[in-house]
Length: 376
Ligand code: CMC
Image 1 (tube, rainbow, N blue to C red):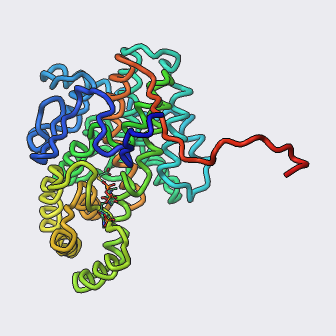
Image 2 (cartoon, rainbow, N blue to C red):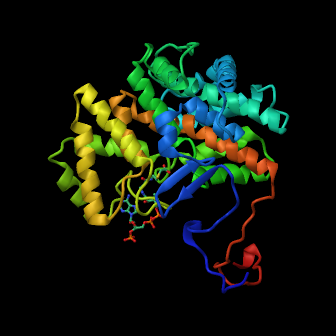
Image 3 (cartoon, rainbow, N blue to C red):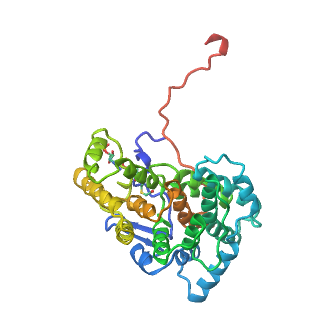
């Protein structure tokens, strides 16, 4: 290898491929899915519309959306084999691990599993988008010795998820908040999990395998795992008065504060004001502003002291907490949304594929003669 070539740690700033799906404008702190701004999508569309946009590259006409939603509804029921396997797992199994296993089982029972054609991959993608919420909710229910709840026809993906989790239908506002958060989480260019998915797809392995790799990458606390760590931190801090001493102590110990900073957005995360507004509304409506107040105080300290901005995971945590969602499923909910972006990228990779195989610069020991074991 050319020793002069510089290595970008963490591939920072490296453009690793071309994509039509998502544009991240780090200078203006803006984000677009197929040309549509995230702020507008979150305000005016639904998660189902965004899923269609990501799968087909265009917004659906009314009839197209109706037919898309009907197809999703037909695919919502999770095959028994998935629950049979889930019930073999220890109840303490991490929900992200359970998801990887469940997606593996879905591959084995998918009628299109042998085909890597685009049409087959669209059908596989729709089954994943339709079924992942039920798997997350019912794995949680199984882990807490509660019976399985089947999805209810006629509800949106967001409303259905809350319905299955709680066993009762959520209010319209709550479903709407979750729906918007799913839109915000849906797609984000070459982030770690999407890139992992593209690497797997580039070997021409199957779509489910690429999604499993993406889930594995998302699990990490520097990526999707951050939303759960944020809430754990808020719970540990416990009160608005304790924010200042807790954060100062953490910063002086060089502890990373979860939900702050971003590899690409150095000025602001364009998704953050949207989720922050929703968290504020939820806390007003629910009469519980403790978590929002604490979060605002942490945000101010992090801005002032470190010049770091809240990312999407920061206010998602208090919003999810106010939606009474258990902390252990915050990252799986990220999967339920981001799967739409992953499958779009996986199909884009298949459609113009070249094996992703970069190089490394060797920095190990010098070359030497092999010493037989008896002479060492
Ligand atoms: N808390 C405290 N210090 C931080 C943080 C943070 N959250 N983020 C970055 N820094 C500091 C870091 O210590 C370093 O300081 P120094 O130069 O003095 O050593 C400097 O900022 C640069 O950090 P970096 O790790 O080189 O930056 P990066 O671009 O590699 O990291 C990041 C990006 C997201 C991994 C990082 O900001 C982080 O660890 N954040 C916390 C985890 C998190 O919230 N992840 C969610 C990311 S966004 C949505 C998603 O993908 O889920």
